[in-house]
Length: 161
Image 1 (cartoon, rainbow, N blue to C red):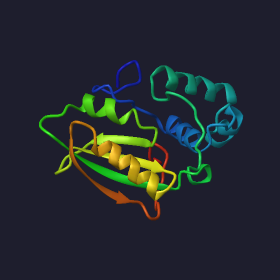
Image 2: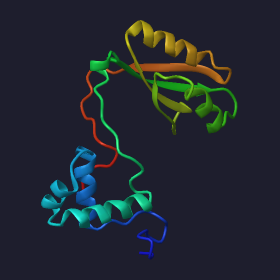
Image 3: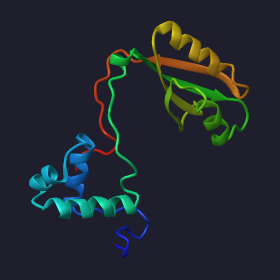
Image 4: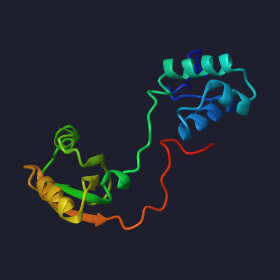
């Protein structure tokens, strides 16, 4: 481990207390340092110092709230495989997909498709419109969509230790 708290490859190295603090914050970002401290056997100031260090190291890049998309009217979701023409760069795909507020995630992938785009919409009709707009991008040859019926597992960004 290097002096900045990262491994030799630059990855974050966490001790069990840091991991426990992150686990608590991932499940309740509003938890007080005192509440977290009681769970990890540290004082509130000690937890704050650790959280500050984790923020400085870039392990924590912000605090947020998790919303229920269905409660906000975004009950329809799908994964859209995108098949691109030629050698479309990830930067070109990113620039296009970022313009769609319905796109909640997009990744280049291995296999037949060049990218997979996770879309949320208000209805199947709205989803159809979004997929049509994505398919109309100049670099897209075709798309293949899979509509989500029942989300089975949803986790915070990092699995529990």
